[in-house]
Image (cartoon, rainbow, N blue to C red; front, side, top):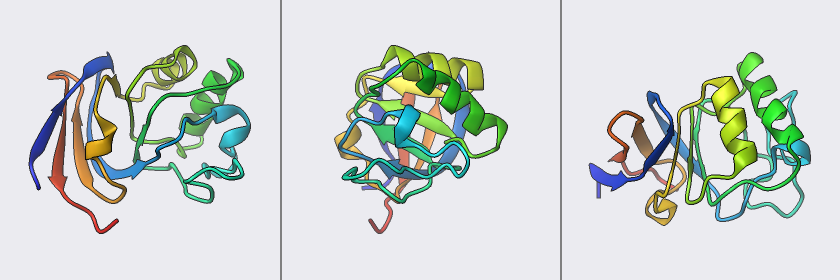
Length: 137
């Protein structure tokens, strides 16, 4: 159903609209995402082979080394980063990466309502995520 609004907590302010890339699994930016291409490379991950570039990346939470914050920053510098990050539970590594890379981020969002391909809008001032157009999967 288009124009569904989900509430959440603002972690890093910002506003953007893009297609969602949704994972049911946590993401580790160190070793799980290739900093040279922006593709998820973690074997057996449900998004393996997908690029995070320009997407609103939705996943339950991060995991892994604190170096993952720098990987997220590096992706931003190479213009390979997601446009925004939506989590169910914010992880300190992802939070620090989003802050230093200036990537809008929210948590406490029910990401099960969002599907890969949905056009969504993140409003990091109002603390809402709007599903603008349902995708095709």
